[in-house]
Image (cartoon, rainbow, N blue to C red; front, side, top):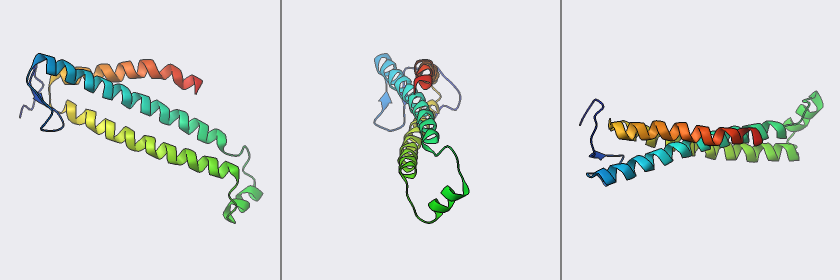
Length: 136
């Protein structure tokens, strides 16, 4: 296995069945990695939007009475909303970790084209999704 970056149209990515031997196959593989990187950025921004919504769902003031009520087992609508947001954030986090590791392992093939696809996908994903953060 190559342990330094190299230019080639052959590579084995992530799984044995994802073996690339042609320039067309490499171009499609770079496109897939680019899209995975873009999806990673989208999930990262979605997680940030969900965090902001979760913080807005919390009560504005945390008085001693409201803290005592929550310790007594009272589950108000704000707590239920916050818990749903927390579940959503957890799912977003799992997807983000899986996508991140997949892209990282693809880059560890040390193929320059795959590396450039991951960088371009991350850049494009951030460029496209970041403006949506302000609207969320």
